[in-house]
Length: 493
DNA sequence: GCACCTTTGAAGAGC
DNA sequence: GCTCTTCAAAGGTGC
Image 1 (tube, rainbow, N blue to C red):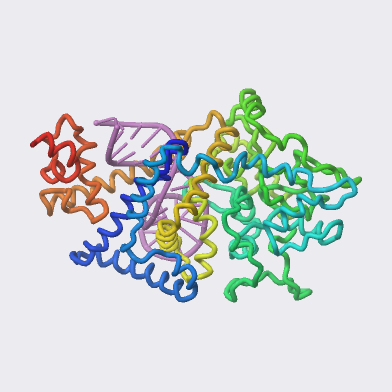
Image 2: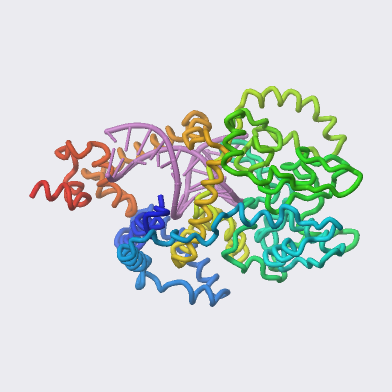
């Protein structure tokens, strides 16, 4: 975990290891010719090919990316560590780039409208800064439309294929039925100020189909005024699109803040100012597991994508008729829902936030669709990022964790361990690894030498973890010397 | 329908 | 204190 106050590591240790592994892996790949390596080569070449294509299409990025392995990330990390050692002052996070985030940024939008109904200057400035595509003019119809759009757009919305091609769709996760944020974008994403490239006006790539109204021929806004499965709307509130600030800013169409038909009501009540005391107060009265599953509302009344309610598909009917037809099923489902607890997701880490933002871009740049390959590219790009760029994501992730802690004080990552079919996956993985280990043992007397390159380095750690420092006599030979250079070999010496 | 792949990071488990 | 494992996202793939 990056030491937010203690230094400049930013997960540097792990990065060092990972980066080093990657380099060594490439070296070893050239030396070995097993079938697995060949497969890995194929995959790697696929990724490299994609990256090559990206380079041809994006010279600026190619210039930004460090030359392969010569000026390695390891070197950068070493320099940074030395720098941090000199400073001893808390490193990058001494003065976070977003002090008070997100609570300081929000008040500007908590009351985006002036009493006369026009958009407030601050909100206008914010919207224009965040989404230059928006034509936010004071008081005009455009401003209202802009704000309406602004309730949902985000970087991914504007450039990515995930937004308007699959509006209001659900995603069924491998593990738990998950209802996504309507537009597959993290609610904090719009608050990210570290990159403006996604906000650059421009036409989507040709292969990204713009949703065009078949009747008018006019491209529809990225988010059709459809009924959001995440924020169900009553017929009278159709067209009220969720705000881009997601769960941080209560939606106009949300049941928790109903809008009267008489006029425009102040849509952002004081509940918006979620602070620790309030959150703790509410949570003390209403434990997270007691949060009503509908609409993923937190005890504060604010929906959060981390709250996942199972079997919500039936709740997202797109018409009254279908809702009536499904009412019986819904009743039956409700009983099942009661049995199942609300699934609160883990907060996203820095890399996940980075992936979430950059995935659409990579998908657009490359023709790849497989997430596995895309993630490989993103992983390399992540390492290619400068420390300052990474720091922004680390900071954002830190804020997210803090917010998550405030919203769900009693939540623990351990809760989600059990949620995954009682460790079924864990067991399966363990069995798989055990089988692999046994396989290696069959052909190679020393398991550490037989493992693939990356795990080869971790293998000595396994001996240490398996037998402990006290029983080093049980360690295999290479483990004694390879891993604990400073421990085992010194002991033997 | 579900697990897997693939990435990094955070956090819990276990030794 | 260290390593290992799981889970976050994403969507194609295979069984």
